Amino acid sequence: KNEVEQSPQNLTAQEGEFITINCSYSVGISALHWLQQHPGGGIVSLFMLSSGKKKHGRLIATINIQEKHSSLHITASHPRDSAVYICAVSQSNFGNEKLTFGTGTRLTIIP
Amino acid sequence: DVKVTQSSRYLVKRTGEKVFLECVQDMDHENMFWYRQDPGLGLRLIYFSYDVKMKEKGDIPEGYSVSREKKERFSLILESASTNQTSMYLCASSPPGFEQYFGPGTRLTVT
Image 1 (tube, rainbow over the protein chains, first blue to last red):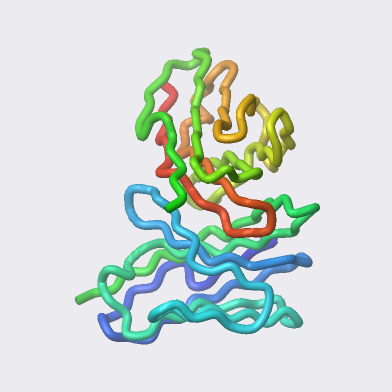
Image 2 (image 1 turned 120 degrees about the vertical axis):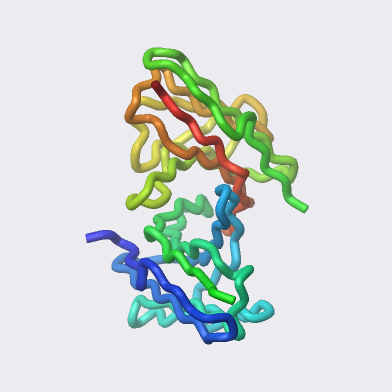
């Protein structure tokens, strides 16, 4: 069993829909990361959070430490949101952020 | 803006060749990482470094070595390339305890 599990693996939605991607983990963590990867490979960090909720534009990330679960929400989805979204957890050792990754959720937004 | 650059976007090498992948970051980050990304397996950590001349093995170090002689540069070395090392290689850097910044990736094909 992977330490970080994401669901769904693939998600197709219409433009404007509210999107939720889920991440569950089985280890103790210092922080959880949400990353975005567009076709071509480049990866961008969206959020790093250790409790509660963070918001950036149309993106919202939440984490429940007790339940070891995080969600990434996208409001008013747009075709440019089409990408692979990756959840990762860090188990920091003296500030060295080794990440363990989920296998990603491929999101496609249809105009 | 933080910039992480990698020496090549695409590379084709023959089995048995010695391969050097270079990564340079311009933000004076202490931590640097090398990952490989394979379909269905996600990103996996090969090696990381938290200081000049310091290195630690990640989850899949076999067949790889690294070098960090200067703070801004972290090199990944395939001593004798094999076909099972065909993959996308991603470098990242971060200050301790903060999010990672990724390079654009090198797609390596070993024939």
